[in-house]
Figure (cartoon, each protein chain N blue to C red):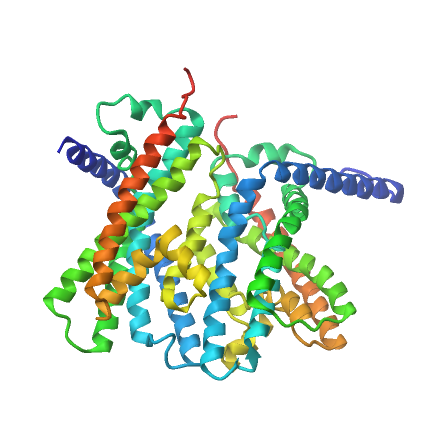
Amino acid sequence: MTTIRIALLHLRVGLMNDLQYRVNFALQVLQSLLAVATGLIVFSLVFSHTTELNGWTQSELLALLGVQAIMAGVIHSVIQPNMMRLTEDVRDGKLDHALTKPVDSQALVSVREVQLWQAVDIPIGAVLIGVALARIGGDIGVLDALAFAFALALGAVVLYCFWLVLATGSFWVVHMWFLPELFEGIFQTGRWPVGIYPDWLRFGITFLVPIAFAITVPAEAVTSRLDWQTLGFTALFTVGALAVSRWFWRFGLTRYTGASA
Amino acid sequence: MSTLPAVSPPRQEGRLRSLGDFYVTTMRTQIQAQFQYRAATYMYLLGMVAEPVIYLVVWSTIADQSGGTVGGLTAGQFAAYYIVWTLVRTMNIVFTPYGWEWRIREGELSGQLLRPLHPIHYDIAGFAGEKIPWLLYYLPIAVVLTLVFDPTFDVRPVEIVVFAVAIWGAYLIRTFNQSALGLVTFWTTRVGALFSLYIVLELLLAGRLVPLTLLPGWAQALSWLLPFRWTFYFPIETLVGDLSNAELVVGLGMQVLWTVVGIGIFSLVWRRAIRRYTAVGN
């Protein structure tokens, strides 16, 4: 309970800070729209040569792009800023400030930063999904919508766990400046259905790097191709990822020595 | 400057020689620095390789679906294209406008302005030096990609020579374009949105997303009027495509042209921009 209150407080301070810089909002919208436009141009190029890709139509892929944009918004606004700050604090020996507080350390290092304007990708993604659904036609039942919301939430948690494992690596590896580049590269695989990749890569972006769970599964829910077993398995995988990343975080902490100690 | 006597030829020669020394030394330092952080650099490269691999997979899938070829290209040719793409991308990494933004906003430029050489020399030499370790890092990646995706190559010796020159042309064109863009920070403090626009144009018109032959006709025609084509598509095509000797010469000529244009724009903007520069403290 206290943890949630602290998280909300950090969120509020972060929001108030970002609200000071309103031009940045316009610039961020511009950049996000450019990224979406590029995605759409690539789709139109691809579909000028084919009518479907691995069983997905253009509208269905648009929904997938929307899910990827939503996840990108979540990652860039809350997950990545916190995790990058964590790696910097470990390197500079400043993590003491977080460790000595009487709250759970993993919770605290996960809520200290927020970059509000990066979250514009979330409404943009929602619009893309809306357009995609309108073009697909068909009915989306209440159950489908719930499954989609649930799958999205699971996806965000799974990506958080993955980032936490990466950032915890900073207890061993000092230089982590490459993390955003590395993650961004892998994350781009999520713009396409996981089924098109060769087996070894599909395995990699399903289990090692959980892009498939985070993006393809919610997109399957919204395009009515998700079965309940897959959703159940995703939930189980998410619980497992939470447990493993927490264990790894605690293991990494034992390696921390601080700057002044 | 105008009060100095005209520079005599021997002095000019001395200046050139010391500039050469400067480049060699800076490159050597950069090579050693890069070898120190092998793991970090490798992780960075792996993130970068994801982009071509994704497009390779997408276009191979389409080629397979539509009976073997898309726009006249086979899966093997796509594989060759994107494997060489990776090398060209590694070799044309430059100091980005974000770097200039940081340098100008934080006042880092003050110290660099006091040095006897123009700051751009440090960028060009430093990033050129990095290419050598990066080339070594690329080789195992190329081997793995070749084993996995089975590319088809048909290369003439002269094409290898032209390629070796063209990747440096691509490097220079990108350096001056992106540095000129970075100078915009003197007026705007932030360059992100403008740089995003530049990258979108490059993605589409340089052949960075897809081989240019897959674009609609008007876009292909447009690519001839802009510098982007010569920074990705041309170097890649020297190895992968079937260019005639005349086309190779035209390509190198266009690279020289765009390098000169780039230098011109950069120096013009630089002269106006530097008057606006102010820094606090230090």
